Image 1 (tube, rainbow, N blue to C red):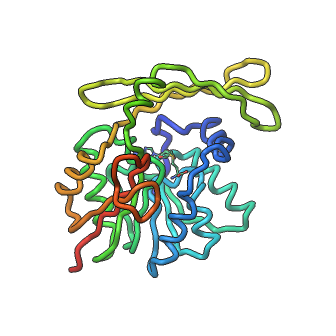
Image 2: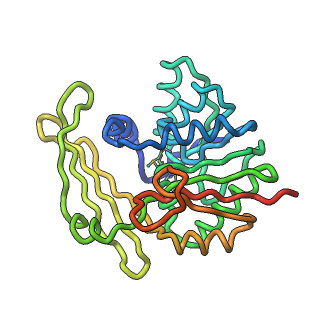
Length: 256
Ligand SMILES: C[S@@+](CC[C@H](N)C(=O)[O-])C[C@H]1O[C@@H](n2cnc3c(N)ncnc32)[C@H](O)[C@@H]1O
């Protein structure tokens, strides 16, 4: 498939910078998704694989894994890192909202809030249909998104957060803030700016995302072609409940 550059986020230096922020991510998701993929005795697809933070560990663990992402530049970073790690990636550019695959998978994943990039209900449902088509009968779609936390929204949204970060051997300043873009539609915008040691702007980016509280995901799952669904909290086996900060959803395709 020909690659285009119509994606708006994770471009150029922003895509390269993504990996520099990973040590701060402090998320147990890599081990979670690698274990899940290893238990699946069938091919695995990571939708929105980005720069390969999780995808490359799937390959390193011997999983037969494919991946796709909308960002051509993130995929270029993934391929460079794969070459350094002597791994052979099978990734391509595609849109989560409407993709088709040649293979069928036992597991499709979409880690780290990426499904929140789909801000329209039609696009969210279309993505669920695309994933369903990509799965074998009995296959599972597993993804995670954050629980919208009222304290964080009230206290932090609108405020610039700033921190120093080591990038390309120099201290850079990362500034970011999250803004409510539309209260009725529950949409928000994340603005990110990176400045080099001289104070020059390296990149600026605006990402538009949707809040996906549990009830909305439950309604989407009910409207989707999936046969059954469940949600756990914080990458544990506990059913999702008040106090968890991450929703981990598993949607199962029926046996045909
Ligand atoms: C937070 S990153 C997650 C990347 C990777 N899965 C990880 O966990 O590190 C979100 C990714 O979603 C991708 N993305 C956003 N919207 C997308 C869409 N509509 N279709 C495909 N990829 C998309 C971005 O390019 C980015 O690589």
